[in-house]
Amino acid sequence: MFTVQCARRWFDEGDTNHLVNLGKYVSAMLAAGAKVAYEKDESLASLALLVAVSSTATVYQLYWDFVKDWGLLQPNSKNPWLRNDVILKRKYMYYLSMVRSSSAHRRARADKFVKRAQMVSVQTFQLQCRLQNKLVVRSLSLSD
Image (cartoon, rainbow, N blue to C red):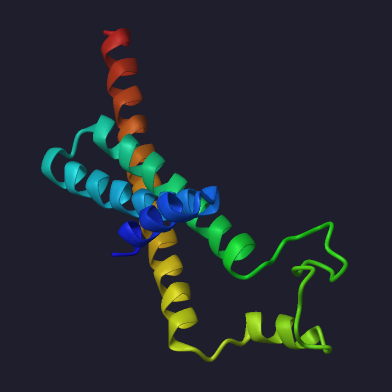
């Protein structure tokens, strides 16, 4: 649904930010597709693809959340690390709300990030183990 909304807004308004936002949702779909492919195949190549796609999607989505949605990490802003256009006079309220957000939406995003980070860590570990096993087998076969 969000994918279609981003595409429609990009088409209607011509603002490329909507197209870049569309990429966030597409990256999630690609990561899910890579996971399905790995579960079917379980080859080293599909595991490497899964790690690469999941890592890229995670970084892409974090960038969008922090920089575009939350307005964080703006080094040239007149409000340190926030957007230029803030409504509240007390800027510490923004930092406080980022750290201690009580909304279920933010908590769900944080939970999703933690789960995705765990998944990528496990996948990376699996990839390293499989690569090490292949190297050991090859080195043993060369020594014969």
